Image (cartoon, rainbow, N blue to C red; front, top):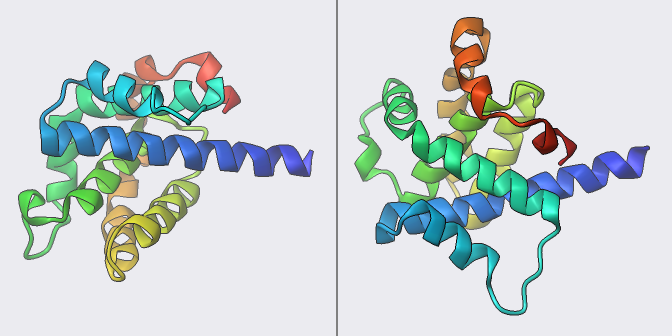
Length: 163
């Protein structure tokens, strides 16, 4: 059972990284969602397990469909910054994690934050982990709003729980 949790964490991390790549393409290159998903998942010499494809696709679609709301929530907690001034990787990590707070109630907020921090440390600047942590620590309160969460659960599918 312990190894299953470790495998699941690895699959979720892989999904989050793929979703970050997709969102980066959408944000910077202005590529449509379906095309970004196809570009990332259909890379030559890369093969992803089906649960990774499902969760990354779910996460990117839910994020893009709710991007205005997600961005407004993040903006509330940016001190002396605008969303547009953030480096693209940090901005999109914050977006994906905020979406996960809203759409994946089975994932504890601490896990969402820790995953975002680790991905920021790996794919962004040396200060990004601290920055992402500070913002997400304030955004996580969204999880306490049961009415809001119930609106976002329409995105959550039973087969995604398996990842």
